[in-house]
Amino acid sequence: MTASIPGASPKALETLDAYGFDERTFLDLQARVRDGSLSPGSNVLQDVEPPAPGDLVDLPEPGSDEHAAAREAGLEVLRAGAFASVVLNGGMASRFGGVVKGAVEAVDGRSFLELKLGHTAELAREVGADVPTVVMTSFSTDGPTRELLADKGMAPLIFSQYVSLRLEPDGELFRTADGDVSLYGPGHGDALIALRASGTLAGLRERGVRYLMVSNVDNLPARVDPVVLGMHVRQGRPMTAEVVPNEGDVGGAPARVAGRPMVVESMRFPPGFDHSSLPATNVNTMTFDLDALDRDWDLTWVHVQKKVEGRTAVQLERMCHEASAVLDTTYLVVPATGPHGRFIPVKTPADLEAVQPQLRELLARPVLG
Image 1 (cartoon, rainbow, N blue to C red):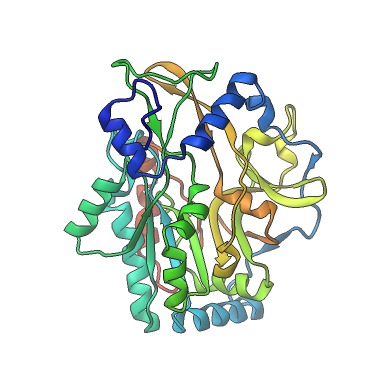
Image 2: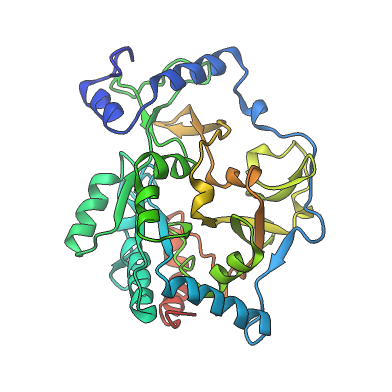
């Protein structure tokens, strides 16, 4: 129970209990914010440099022998029913007027979730095998997501990320205008932890799944592709992180930290780091060996500042791609756009309006690429 959270409303306490709030961990993190040991400065990594030649692997060109071999390796996994797709649909539903992004109409009357899950279902029919789909929700998106899926007759596996409490910059509890505590989902790193803790990982293993892909609900081109899956299998590493050529972005990217390649989030680069020296940008689409995820994760808590009700609030978050710090990872360079593009991020309604032509082109692609 969370009765020691002062001033929390009964509704907030109920939500904290229902979505796995870890009070002991929270109080420890709160103390670190108060004493300054967890701060924007503590996010920053040392000894960071661009990736070395050979750290990145290009997706093979269509028509090449390597492309054909990768495609066949991926199809073999799919036909064996050994693959699952995990769609990240958590967070706070804050950028589309309070509507859960997965339920937003993406193109031609179909929502993001319908399109993501619908493609996987079509692919399963094409290969003649089961391709399980898993959806991660949050306390903010869980109810609306379940309603949408039930209405559309879709029945993926569902698990939820955890919940935590926002803080003031000095470490005190952040209060909303009505005096209540302020809840949030503490980052997509929860996917690694809650997938296992919920029993979903074990359930997938029992169904014969050996590989799974994790992708954001708002990146529709990040769909099951036998070539990408085959490259993961053929490279032989437990994790593959998809990246796209850097076109001036300052987001997360593969870099070397103390000599080890890993995905580094933007706020973790040292001040003044030359982001133009990074050849690629992370897109938060990953493929894993399922067995590699059956472990305890000690992910870094990063200090993130957000504007809430016009004030600065602190959120402590964990990132899914930090798995690359402990798992040998293939950094697979994929095209962002074009006939085989895999990255059309949609963060705002304006983004969605701008990419309508690209999304229609995406829907016209063959199911198996």
